[in-house]
Image (cartoon, rainbow, N blue to C red; front, side, top):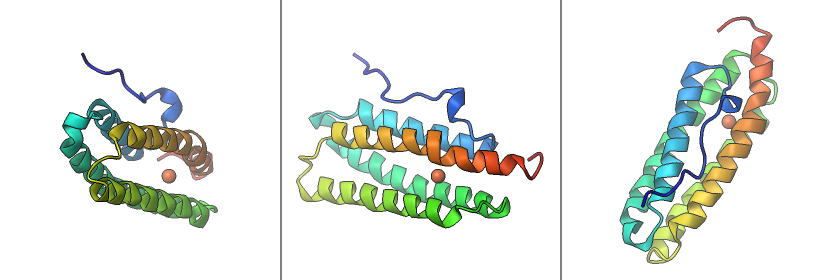
Length: 138
Ligand SMILES: [Fe+2]
């Protein structure tokens, strides 16, 4: 039986920048795939998916930070610190996963990822959305 999604996209997630929305949708897709694979049998998939998600996050954070720089978003340094914190935590999960002989199951990882990204996109990312509207159409 197919597991339900742990996180799904809604218009509330939109930051009004097509590329960044596209990135965020891809990230949610990664999280749902990790969640769907979070059984002991699929632990190899989790490792691959988690490292692909980390690589994609690096690219996405770069895109988002460039955008924030372009619109002169004042809280860039603060926001970047949240991204860095996430990268550390996600990398830690991957290391634990490898070191523990995969005892850390995907469910714990997907719960963390789903709640981090949900809060981040809905609260933190929405702050540059408002800042961006003052520079006119994109
Ligand atoms: Fe962000």
